[in-house]
Length: 113
Length: 112
Image 1: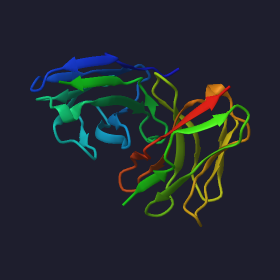
Image 2: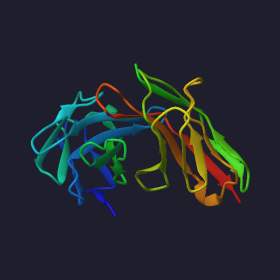
Image 3: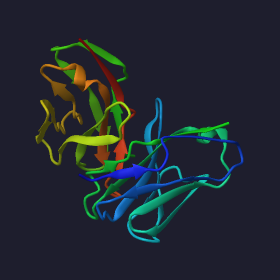
Image 4: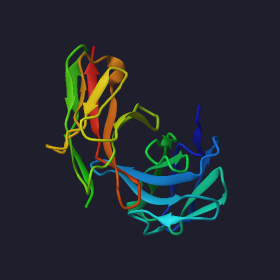
């Protein structure tokens, strides 16, 4: 089975801190994605990557950056966390050319105080 | 633009009841359509999909038919179980960049 692992289930940070959310997949998928999930808004795409060192902005990239130094790892970075970035963050992966079948991690609930 | 609208939740049903969760879409052309399910404490997983008009996707007793006339992809199940309690997301593949766009989700509670 494909496994997408997010390093933390719950995270509490303070406003202004730099935050790293880590995601690792074990199935050699080329595509990796970061979404945020908010009540009443559903999932929104923040960033995605088709390959190592490659990244593209999704629909809501402001306040975020990403890093993909290795194929299996995709990191989401909050340069200076703010309270409106309190959310559930979901990482996903898929094979190149099959963006329709996404495999998701179980999520990181980030609270910014 | 491309978007998905699904019925507000939560939906509460008794075990063995018939389930319908409505989903309509707005998109360029005829996108692939999906239902994803998120069980408590887990990530989303693909439940079923349909890639063209009149296709029926099915899995685990759930079905959805791609209706281009009504731009709909309603999820149905004839007899729900307590284990079906989850959040259900309707989604489409956006034409311009192949990304998956999700609806807001519908929480389903099944009572024993």
